[in-house]
Structures are given as structure tokens and as C-alpha cells.
Length: 76
Image 1 (spheres, rainbow, N blue to C red):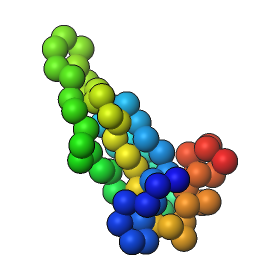
Image 2: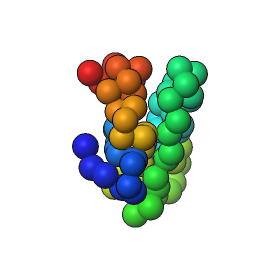
Image 3: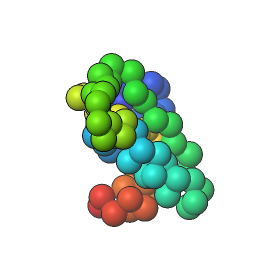
């Protein structure tokens, strides 16, 4: 996993903003804070857009909650 800011790490990268938001909601429901990082994401526009990006949308969590977040998102 990559580190974006001190103390925060990327738990997953999604192809669309709404996917990252759904995952962030799941983490919030189990008490794990998260942030969505869209910097550098290039959006695709047109019919059926739905927030898709070329580079992806990173979901970040505190480094000390990474294992819990991975389990909550069924990534472990």
C-alpha cells in the first residue's frame, strides 16, 4: 500500500468516485475513518459517465487501522 500523507495509507483504489464513497461508507459504519483522494484523477465524460476516472480514486485510512479496513472491505 502507498502512503499519501504521514499516518494515512491507501487501502484500495477504485475506478469511480461512487465506488470509493460506498467503501468509505462501509468503513464509517464500523468506526474506521477514511478519506477519498481524487488528486490526479482524470475524469471521463459522456453518456453513462457516473464519475469514472482514468487514474483511479484512492481510499485512505489511518496506517494503524489498515488491517481492520482491509477486513471490513473483504480485502484481507
